[in-house]
Length: 122
Image 1 (cartoon, one colour):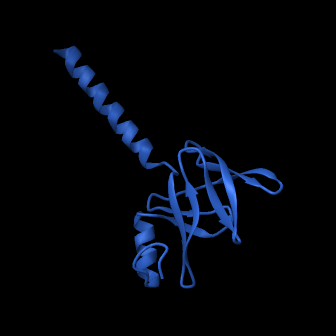
Image 2 (cartoon, helix red, strand yellow):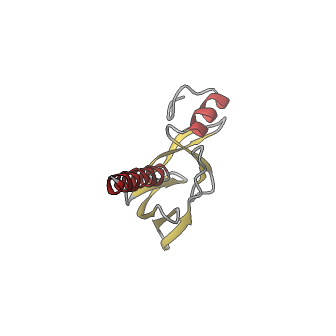
Image 3 (cartoon, one colour):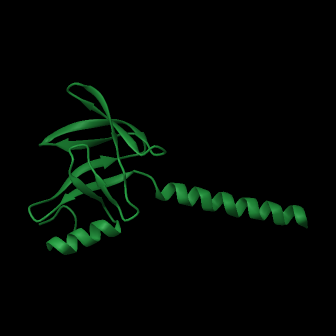
């Protein structure tokens, strides 16, 4: 009986840890939202993506969810950027813009603040 109880507790804790870690993933779409724009700036998939800097797309060649970093292939070689994502879904992009993760609390608040109905639409 004790072995089953210990096994159940270990399983429950493992599940909680996996869920907590998955919520901290950088994966998603990030929008630059302010009174002048509501544009997709960056897309991050499991280990790749793209970022728009002044109208030019650059490839994200590495995603490090543990250290919250992305590596971008630029005209001058690969550069690594810190992506400090708040629990609400707000971050600073490699082009130094405040961006919002689609579907996050911060994104919904920014859309409301600037009068947009949904991301990417006027």
